[in-house]
Length: 319
Image 1: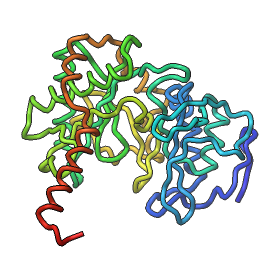
Image 2: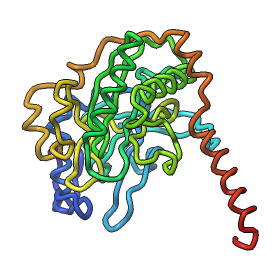
Image 3: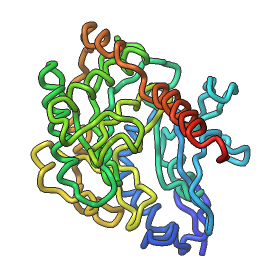
Image 4: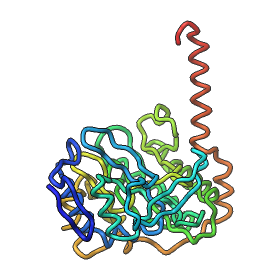
């Protein structure tokens, strides 16, 4: 089954996206068309990574725009320190580009935290990640802890479901703080929130150290991304990362937001734009507080090596 829409050739529209999706490529395209005026503003002018899934294969992340992509797709060349190479990222600045990616079975859309040509994040992000299981109650409690920690600092954020089991809290920034300063402030806020109720929340990066608590992930800074508002997720039922109000948080079930339900819930609204506070300034004292907190990924790497060495020394005969 093939077709054409808005000048883009579409193929295999009746093909299921993946086992458990309960949706075809046609359904994905129809959903993105229905929400295009809401999702395009959060993708515009941001280097874009997508998660694609080919039939019968595992999902994979695509950053470099493929050589076979149409020449009308806008791009941005970004130097990647980790891989020591220049990455040619696409920019999803119009519907035709988004449509082309949907036809490529790009299901998830993860924009950079800074606009193209800039190195300062536009938002500070806290990712609330629950332990195994489907109980959303601890996530709600932890999100409220983060909101309290922000309020104590005179800050406010917008909240959305992650499209999986957690939530994302976005604090819009005024552009004064560098990437490293935003990362430090995020660590400080995460630590403050966890201290408000250490029985529920933790900032422990290593899973085995979390003791079944909700993880406040304060590492979403720099080159790390999160799924965009309104982005589908590669999850059973094809759930969506959906904006909610703080007043709704206690009553929602994140599994209710799917590519089939969201268009009818939205109608003409754009809750992500409507609920986003004005840009805010990060206080220098908060940034300094965060600089005193070890970077979680680096600390976890060193701790992992230390534990591995301890295990080897305790069992020298084992590989």
